Structure formats: C-alpha cells, structure tokens
Amino acid sequence: MPSVVSIAGLSKHYQVPERDAGLKAAVKGLFNRTFKTVKAVDGISFDIQPGEVVGFLGPNGAGKTTTLKMLSGLLYPTAGKASVLGYEPSRRDHDFLRQITLVMGNRNQLAWDLPAVDSFDLHRAVYSLPMSEFQRTKDEFVELLDLKDLMQKPIRNLSLGERMKMEIVGALLHKPKVLFLDEPTLGLDVVMQKRIRSFIAEYNQRYGATVLLTSHYMADVEALCKRVIVIHHGQLLFDGELSALVEKFSAFKTVGFTLEDHTIDLSEYGEVISTDGARVVMRVPREKTSAVTTRLLNDLSVDDLTVEAAPIEDVIESVFATKSEEG
Image (tube, rainbow, N blue to C red; front, side):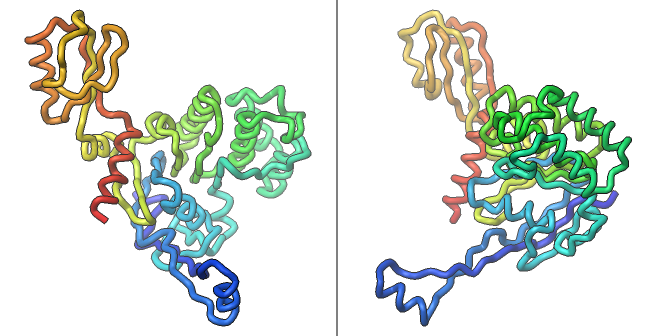
C-alpha cells in the first residue's frame, strides 16, 4: 500500500541577517550586510501509512511547524522531496488542497465577528460542498462536540475551548483525508483537551483519516498515537512505536509501595523520589527493577507494590538530553 505522506531529505533553510549592537554596526550593516543560515528543517525522511495517527514531537524551534507547513503547501522546501496523497504539496493543486487540512492551535480561521454558522457556510461555498452533504457533516460534528447552543454566537464571544472546537469543525467540514494538527489543544483545560482528543480519535475511526499531530501535552500523544517521530534542531532523532521510545530512552522505572515502618533507610534499594504517609515511590535503574522488587518483598513488610515505566515527559526529555550530549 502506498504511503499517504512520504518525505525524503526534506530541508528548509533561511538566510537571516545579523549584526552587532550599536549605531556603528547599524550603519555598517546598511552597506555590508552579513547573513547566517538557519536550518529550520535539515534533511528529515519518513513515511506515514493510510489511517495512521502519528505524534510529531520536539522542543520549541525543532522544526515541527515548518515541516507541517511544507507538507500542506504553505512553504517551499529548500531541498528534498515531499509527497502527500501522491501530490507535490508546493504545487498546491486544487484536488490536493481539497483532501487535506492544517489546524494550528494558535491561529484563527473563522471570522471573529460572525457566528460560526456563517463561517461554516463560507467554507461550504469555498469547497463547493453539496448542501445535503454539508448539513449532514456539520450536524454530525456539532453533536460530537456538543456545540448546538453555540452556533449563533459570534466567535469573539466564545471561550478559548469553545472557539477551538469551532475551528476544528470548520477545518473538517470537507472531510479531509489527511489532518496536519499543530498543537490543537494548546491552552485548553484538561476537560476540553480530552473532548478534542476523543473527537480526533472518532474522526480517524469513522473516515480512516491519516493524522500527523504535534503537541506539548503528552496526554494527547499517549491517547492518540502508537507511533511517534521525534525531531530536534531540524533533524530526525527517533521514528517508531511510542512503547519502543520508552524502552530505548527510559533508564529508570518507578516502584511504588506501602511501607508499615516509616523509619527504615531505603537508600540501598534505590532513590526515594516521594513519600506520602505510608506510600513510598522510588526510582530504580531499569535493569535492576526485578532484583530490587524481590529484595523489597523479602526484606521488608510492604503492601500494594507497583512497577511503572517512566512518565513519557521524562522519556522525551532524556531523548533531547542524549542528543545534546552527543552534540
């Protein structure tokens, strides 16, 4: 089966002017400007199969948004090749644009002073959607996101979470096959994040859409993505299953247990990272987890012992730390 998204050696470099501070440097810069090359994306390659939901991770400035803009046709790459649904994104073919969408959590696409229903009608006209199909899709999404009572309100009168739900509905009315989602839950409370995650998962299941998702909220990634791609300084660090990422970069596991005697010194078993009454949580090297838990059960009177992998946030942080050390 051909890949829905395929990129090879994709790069985006910018020439950025630079100068020293001060009036003398400013005058000099008028006649002799110097530039430096900023490699926003630097030769990354990956493929995404139909129906996959892939997490696209990296710190601020890693090149995630730049990559999504190249894949959606907003930016022309400096080098390399990109293909989405068999189209070259930078050509911006009409048939290509009808099958994709780009949702950015910090950007508005709906008219600020109009109710969402009017903006939705505009989208219907832009995409030449049949009225019956448009009405059916709109009603379906409005019900899934519980937006019925908000449709007549101007966008400016909605809360951030309500506005973001409206933005997502507007972006999906033409039922795109590929979703590029850039921080779709940015700034939302926990309840609203969960609601939008559920909607994305439901859309993926109903329409078999392919999703490339960036997010700083690891709950989004854990809930939606089996596979993750990690980039840093524009370069690919990891591409594989989320569980494999944890296995590769997590050097520790956490062991939690309830201990009757609070005065016992536990330093010989591992690093105690928290205590809450009788409950103790320790960090233990992954390769020693089995031996340590056996010793705890044999040496001490413990109850309710649990062993868990490190939180995904810690794993991602260790990926970047490893790359920095290598650099």
